[in-house]
Length: 393
Image (cartoon, rainbow, N blue to C red; front, side, top):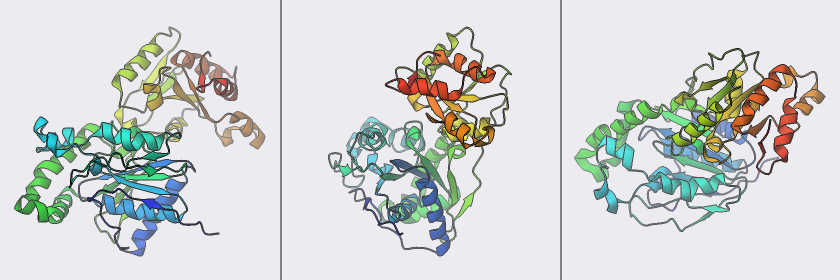
């Protein structure tokens, strides 16, 4: 049975580009493949980020992806980070002209979070703004709201989409890969109508410089779910994603804590201080930005080779921002480790993860290592807490 096509809601910005014609069956197949991977992430609200060099084709790819998702019956919202730049009237307050200034100052991430990303992430929100300030007309559209269905997919394109200010929001990350020189040539050709003879220098000396700062500081590629070579619009293809570093170096009796959120250094300092308060806890902490944005399943897979470990603890965005500083405990056991389906159902009765305050890490780790307690018992106790947090272990 074919799903009924759902609506695609676009930004009201005059910067909006039209849906491009289908370049080839090969391109259509690749877009469809990524759409299926996104849909497999769940039936609830999903946030998809598309990044890459300037003129890599992000907006067009986002439009094509939105069409495939809507054809599968999911309502889609399309936005671009260009619609959340700081107003030109304030440009005298900061350097927006150099590559460094463009990277540091051009985008209003607080506005993007408040108007678009936070509402999309919150189950209680029923609308969001797809545009802050129109980058061409400078008209403020922040009061214009678009409905947010419970199963909506938000597809956002833009350079620097995976900076720490916004990286935590994405359920699926796409990088469109093109050569730096091709980016300059495409961008200059696209923008020559308004930039004239300066178009190439703008792209080479401002945008490309900003991109290189971004790559050096943030290194987003290891966190991608899909990396697509978009050099030839008619013949795009997937590249092998860069692998995150191995989770090695853990002592035989150490608990394993992996930091996956890098937007709140003060929150992380407090988490580490709380872990250090437990004199009995020995812990191997992975504090490597290459793991930024990693989800529980990815960390679980990376840690699964440690046969002496039954649980891994993630310091994610919730850990950093919530008052309880609770880490996400994820079981490393799967169906293959259980005797039968009934045994696996018992293990995951309350899910394959729960949250525990830092003071509980030692008890959970040791009890599971010794077999004194089952993962499902701790998960059940956490489920009884109003915030789903294990307070005493």
